[in-house]
Length: 166
Image (cartoon, rainbow, N blue to C red):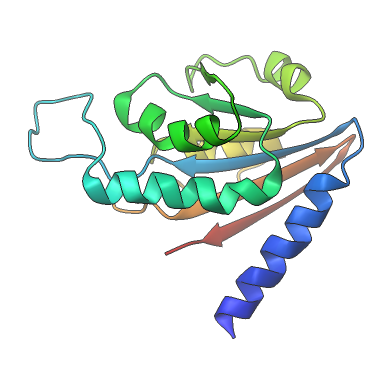
């Protein structure tokens, strides 16, 4: 039953993604995949093999949405998480700073597009909340690499959903 519910949501979102009008923007926000925690002094670790597999899985899930831009913080783990999706869509990853981003400029730049945003446990939900305009989602736990936040902005209308993947 749970599997059919997820398929229904993916089909519904896929349909809406391909039927977009010019002022409808859809943002897909994920936290980076599993990072290598073997060296606690390394502030910029790569993904583990499991993380690389998850990054590919994300690209497969997101392939249904016609991603037109990929944004990532400038860290190995986030860039590596976004790379399969960017490669599959022949896109260059654009980097952003989660605490210094100009949301008005970002919204203008991404208006009418389907956008993947890759962040961190302390930035992904916060970014979704900025797009929504209220605190709808709490910070992600450090061991959670499976949340997919989908925020759709169409004029003044904003809708959002959180899907927990495996």
